[in-house]
Image (cartoon, rainbow, N blue to C red; front, side, top):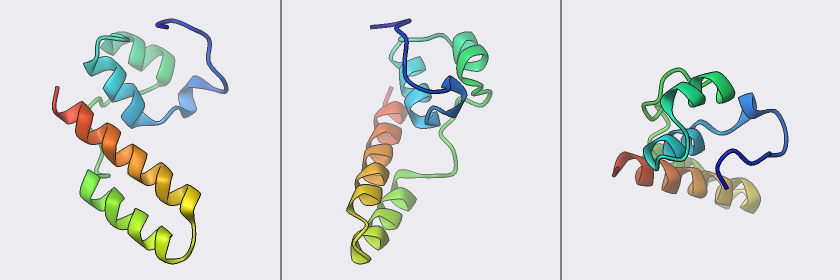
Length: 83
């Protein structure tokens, strides 16, 4: 639900999620800047390929939770760049 309350400090929200929300029309660029503190709405230097490589490294050392978070972030970046 747009405008719904969330958990935690909005300024710590993952940038990829904010970028995806802007591209999906859930929040405006102005809201992204004011609420989430995201000034640059272009995907960061964390390209999906780099995130996937980091996820593979995490899997090799048994960090499943970290690997899944990186894969999710890579997917969100790739979805945001398609819009």
